[in-house]
Amino acid sequence: MSVDLMDFDEVLARFDPVLGLEVHVELNTASKMFCGCANQFGSVPNTNTCPVCLGLPGSLPVVNAKAIESAIRIGLALGCQISPRCRFARKNYFYPDMTKDFQTSQYDEPIAFDGLVELEVDGEVFAIEIERAHMEEDAGKLVHAGGTTGRIGDAEYSLVDYNRAGTPLVEIVTRPIYGTGAKAPAVAKAYVSFLRDLMLALGVSDVRMEQGSLRCDANVSLMPKGATELGLRTETKNVNSLRSIESALHYEIQRQGAVLAAGGKVHQETRHWHEEGYTTPGRSKATAEDYRYFPEPDLVPVAPSQDWVDELRDTLPEPPHQRRARLQGEWGFTDLELQDVVNAGALEVIEATVAAGAAPASARKWWLSELARRANEAAIELSDLAITPAQVAAVQQLVAAGTINDKLARQVIEAVLAGEGEPDQIVASRGLAVVSDDGALSAAVERAIAANPDVAAKIRDGKVQAAGALIGAVMKEMRGQADAGRVRELILAQLG
Ligand code: ADP
Ligand code: MG
Ligand code: ZN
Image (cartoon, rainbow, N blue to C red; front, side, top):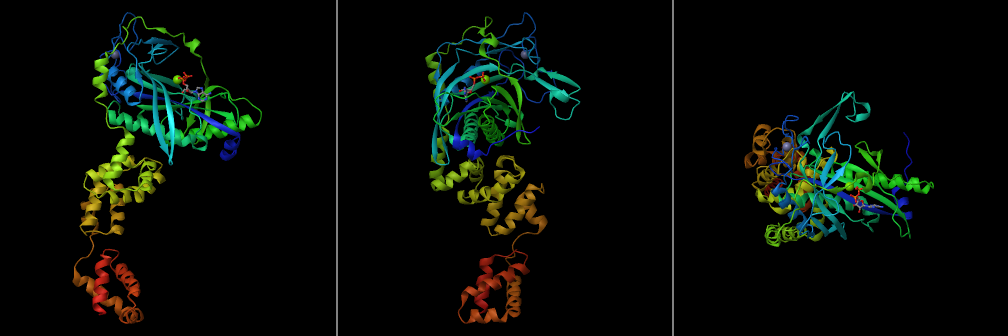
């Protein structure tokens, strides 16, 4: 399979990318959207089912009030209007994983619409218009078995698990997003990251991208510079990590650029993202007519009272951008420092590390240097590293107490990541504590002076800067386990 890609910068010189992001959020309600089955990830297949979510004839759905409450809170948090009255609709399709063969969704009457999200990416603010946030149910899950890819193409057989069928979803759809230029992939990533933070703050979803409780379909098209009409778009489905959203869009922009530059047409289609770094075509896009949407006759319209909506508005958490401004003030970070933290996706872990007792500057230092490097190497998020904010705070407290220095702290962190236990245990088991016993340090200082008579002479002559060489020699002898400041004091004291 050989696909032409155009250099990213070259595409940007000739075209403007336009984004459209559809994000599905699985709600964490106790029960499903239209029945009383448990809404639970990871249960034994087909155990959380009943006639309603199995789509058996004659069964009747009832709307989950908690799901409506969550959908309204999401809508309000996105600055949307809440519809005083809306209906569900049937979206007809052949769904092997949803035996009704229609999805109960919302079509022309979404519960929330016309919202706005402002995002800052690398110091530039982007306004993302929310077209709508509507309620729907998830389908079940097909497991394609017996092959190597887990895809249907090389499977020997497929299994179906209806546990997920009927899980409450809110789908958040943007209007086309113009003007992001080369930052298109980064804006998409920042937007989904923003939604993830917001859903967490609202407490409405676990938003675990790897488990599919937050999924993004990333639409993108290219407009030749100066054009006024939208180009044909592709929709890369179910991209399930923040990194992949960025990479998938980067790839699609390069691919579409090459297609258009060669005089071709972009096929309006869904595409699959492969973690190896490319997309492949899925089905060509159905149009709304194909779905033969019609109002769901088995459910009454949803008509939240203004009082209820106002009540829910009072439960909204601090908006993420306000929270950032507050934390910046509390932590005393400069704009640039906070920017680095946000870009690294480190706000939450630093907040938790500070809450566990570390100084903000120290928390920032560890998460943005040592730990960011490791997360980057492993291509994972900071929060997925095998070290908790509490453990980072414990390491920092050991440094602050003088038990270890920064260099030893790096070894402790490495050991925590390797699963050797808690920081204090590691210091004990690896014998990492700094030597603060002046007797041992003085002896090492004497040896260093004896071994480096010229350096010692310089210091005696007042060239105090020369002490560095002796400190280095002592630190080496102590295998780094000494307090460099104390060593310096001892050297200067001995050389009078
Ligand atoms: P579908 O049901 O085909 O997925 P939706 O309306 O649910 O359509 O979502 C399409 C998404 O793509 C929306 O975010 C929309 O704003 C966006 N979009 C529509 N046309 C284009 C285009 N030409 N280029 C980029 N994005 C687009
Ligand atoms: Mg869609
Ligand atoms: Zn059920």
